[in-house]
Image (cartoon, rainbow, N blue to C red; front, side):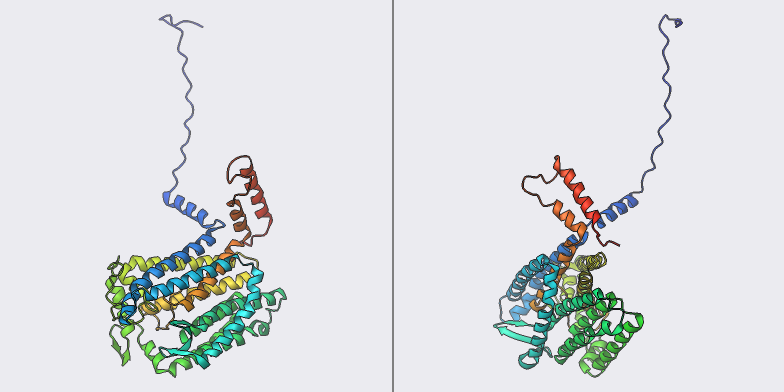
Amino acid sequence: MPGSRTGRPPVQRLTRRPPIPRQPRENPVRRLHTRARKAWDRPLTAYYLILGGSLLITVLGLVMVYSASQIKALQMSLPGTFFFRKQFLAAAIGTVLLLLASRMPVKLHRALAYPILAGCVFLMALVQVIGESINGNQNWIAIGGSFQIQPSEFGKLALVLWGADLLARKEDKRLLAQWKHMLVPLVPVAFLLLGLIMLGGDMGTAIILTAILFGLLWLAGAPTRLFGGVLSVAGLIGFALITTSDNRMARLACIGATEPRTDGADCWQAVHGIYALASGGIFGSGLGASVEKWGQLPEAHTDFIFAVTGEELGLAGTLSVLALFAALGYAGIRVAGRTEDPFVRYAAGGVTTWITAQAVINIGAVLGLLPIAGVPLPLFSYGGSALLPTMFAIGLLIAFARDEPAARAALAMRQPRFGRKRGGGPTGPGRWNTMRRRASARSSGER
């Protein structure tokens, strides 16, 4: 090698490597959307939404019942915590029912359908004999002391379980293609329950029961002509019941009212519900600082508890409640859509229709968009008769969400077994792969 002029060996020049092309930066919004979509599609998403959403709604409802009912209790010369203690007791019993329902197998749920329906029909008929009238509706049975029970609230659960079992058995026998098998005996039994409810004058509960019936028929694949026929008959009956009652016509006249007296109708409750929402602002006046609950707003702790929530917690609080109900409704639809079991599909769809329709009717009445139907906000308003069957229905959804094959495999991976590590180690990944293969080998029903 020839030397350089300085006597030093020539410096070998390093060849330049071609520049590595830079990966284009991913849009942060798209990256966030991708991560959220992956998290949304996880097997346990519906399970956590149902469990967490129902728990948050119930706890927030207990807080708002305590805040909204203090003045009412003091006006009745009762302790300020009177209504809260009764609601807390109902929530404790409801939690036990929720846990029992979430651990029951599907066969046991189906076996309970007929006894629950028979018991509800008996109690709803008994109401017409020994029932008590409250606010013009005779739908209550006194069971001792200050405790009462409203059997029509349990009729919603009875119709969901019995209707789901009936349609599932007929689908297994491929009888739903015939319109008479789709309608009989589902529609006659539903009309029997509706008739017993309307004898007591409770049209709000009858509307919820009708919504459950239509939800079951929709899930069963009722043709548009048949579905429209049943809807038309129900609409004509409802129109006749409304036009023949001055009280119901007055409630229709109060839709969108801004004055306590509108066209001769007393719209005091509807208007003061709007006042409560309007005075709350963005973040509300503070927990316990409601003005309308001091005798201005009737039924502040029951039908119009959403108005007190808007006044004390503001728009942020009401939107949070709406988001929780929306998440609960989405999770129920997801459970119904991802199962291959007909009973699970009908029952999950019926429960979701029940809770969603009741929440829409209650909130719509408070906002002045719908007539006041006298139905409580599910899991939120005061009332043990409404809370107990609703929490049992939430337990049904939790059981169905846990029973999905992919969810079952994911839950099994999270339960440590004796002598095995929960994660890592030589057995961790192998066991995870085994469970993944087992879950993929079985039909998950995802669509």
